Image 1 (tube, one colour):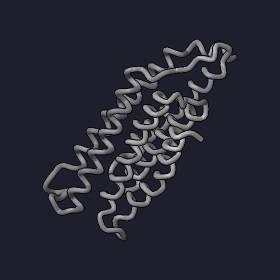
Image 2 (tube, helix red, strand yellow):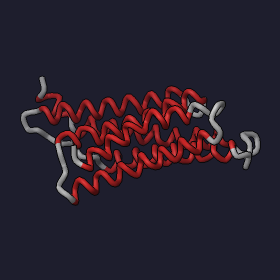
Image 3 (cartoon, rainbow, N blue to C red):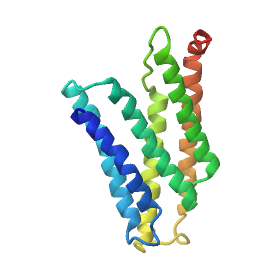
Image 4 (cartoon, rainbow, N blue to C red):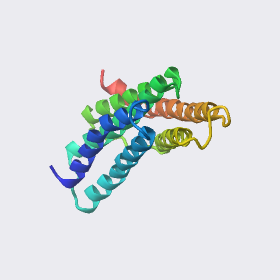
Length: 192
């Protein structure tokens, strides 16, 4: 296994530890801070593994499969933790998760088609990813501030801000999913 793939594996390995700290506020001091550190490290590996793979010609089929899977595992885990903690609505997270499965399915069908189409992320997919990552980081950050006593839920509209950010992410997620389905609708006709 090359260095790029090891970095991707590290991202997946960090996910259970991230989830533990997200859900351990009652038993671990500064647990949200530790969760944020792990989320940051995992996010940095996402940037580094791609650069390493391209620079040193370490692009493999395994890496092409594992890298987007690792991203989805990290983001979906964060969002599920948010639902558990009451920081996000289950219906919003469900739309985001359904879109991830749907686009992954479209990509699998495209890759398995006669034309072996590789579907790259479009601008809507990139906006969706950026909005979701920003929402996750900001929401965790707000709760770090609360855990340090810098402000309270009553003194700052944390839930309102969290909801707005998640609704924006959900909207961009739905739009990008619809666009993916529309742009690659011919794949499903060929797959019959």
